[in-house]
Length: 213
Image (cartoon, rainbow, N blue to C red; front, side, top):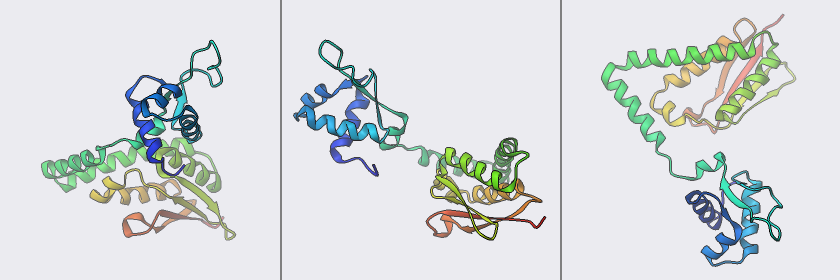
């Protein structure tokens, strides 16, 4: 499901407002048939946006009706002002202590990220390291994947940037991201960024070229 329909959005909103609600209660509240609601709920369940608070199939005669609640995945369908807050915080830090000190803070963050990646990727080949890095970045929300090419190089593709607003405001975040990847593969491969969201591309792409043995 790319985007819930308007009817599904109304169901999501109502489910969030209550601590579990059944299909029959939703049908009564919205003035539609139970079968119509159940079809929408089936779609939301398949999309991973809702979950039953009682086992699926337990709503037979004499048994409690299934009540539905939202999953954490549904959070993105509600207003979120965290981007505005992040930009405000970055601007405030910049005004209070200056650009140079803000860069030091970003560098400290990048050092912690690098250490974490190094622990997870230690002692592996370039190929395995690239694949594990893609898996880590995907879990972090970057929609990352890696592909191998006939010339022995790899492409790490990040289809989404969960910190895009912050990176737009503070581009040292992107600079340090490239430096982190280059350090991870230092002595093993050359890492180049060939596409960049902030440069107008639709994704960020990193070429990983193993060094000759």
